[in-house]
Length: 178
Ligand SMILES: [Zn+2]
Image (cartoon, rainbow, N blue to C red):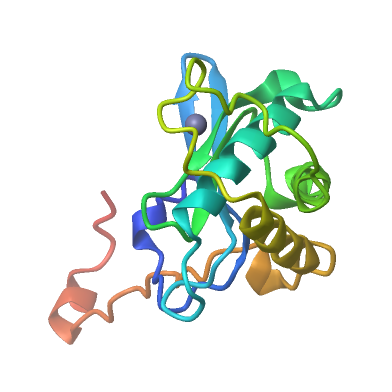
């Protein structure tokens, strides 16, 4: 299992897309955290808080009710920078594994009509801050990226560290593997 800590990612090179942010082992189980990046950092305007909040409610509800994957959904929630969401799933998974799930989630959100789930003062801490129209537009934009993704939309722009060149002195020492 490969661990990909999201802090090593150059956000200036990051595109919109669906990425594996990290994998964690909890006991014998692996959980995969996905970076659902709707907005390209420092390129696209970030989401409005009302859009983020409406999408959080609509997408979380959809994901947890999905007949195939619902039981493996551990968490879905927004990034503080408002460029995307985190989705945490049980299992050692790739972006390609969950692409159809995320696609249909945002397809659903882009066409959503009616009462937003859980948007009452009893159920939510600030239910007045929701903007369904902006949420639908952001969902449609993201869906359009997901339906024909390029490699750069599914894999972080991670540079593999280069092996430092050994000086002649070090080469002569040779063979001291640790
Ligand atoms: Zn809420």
